Length: 348
Image 1 (cartoon, rainbow, N blue to C red):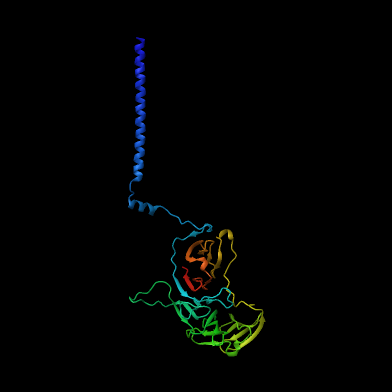
Image 2 (image 1 turned 60 degrees about the horizontal axis):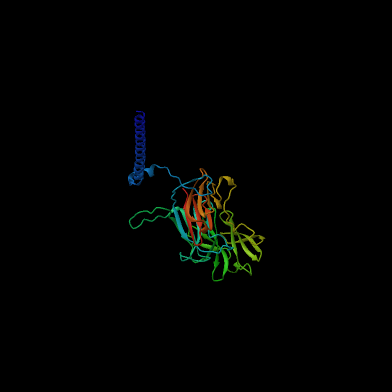
């Protein structure tokens, strides 16, 4: 009898183990099936409309450059621009700048190749007037978008640059080469005539100021009728004159050492700033009202920062190609010079 009871217990124990084993297998099978379902769902094709909607509502951010110091980078800011061809010059050329703005008007003077394609050292003086847009309709009568300044220019004067507008913008002074005599001189052209009427401040033999060279330089206007200029007088000598642009009379002021005046200086406008609050800036140039700053970063990207809110946006320019930047007096335009071209951007 005792053996029979033990056999019953043994049978029940074996049955319980089998049931537990089967339940374990079922649980494992269920987990595997669930995992497979999840895996299959992950391989199912995503609805394209749902994906687009997800992308639209998911916030995105623009990765800033390494030096932005927290400034907000604007993703897309379309600026009106205007491009012209300018002469090519050597970096160490002693004559004045290839481009210059008027002091209180959106007038940009620059030296263009005479063929308007390519040229070295000299060309025609051109003035772009961004206050007087000359937008001509196309064949369908449509007015084009973007900048379209009016333009006047000289012809056959072999202009080198060193531009200076008179305070009332009625005259433009610049250096040029009298090609037949190989002598440098200074012309003052009448703007109302489209730069076609002009006077030569060093006519005939008066341009022969130095047996080594005949370099000239425009320094500054003193009123609308008087211009300060410089003329070479030796290896390390320059004479400063006051020129009456109505009569052409020259009045001697003083002698200075070579390049001992500000006539050829075109420095960037740089203010005192806290470097901890700005990115690392190369070739920084603040606008006259100091509301904007142009600069090139360490990766040769070019930027403009809006000082008011520290927003900044990138220009489509390789900083390695930039030779010079000049802001207009009203801080509305920036002219950027390259080896043989100038791009003008309107800041909005």
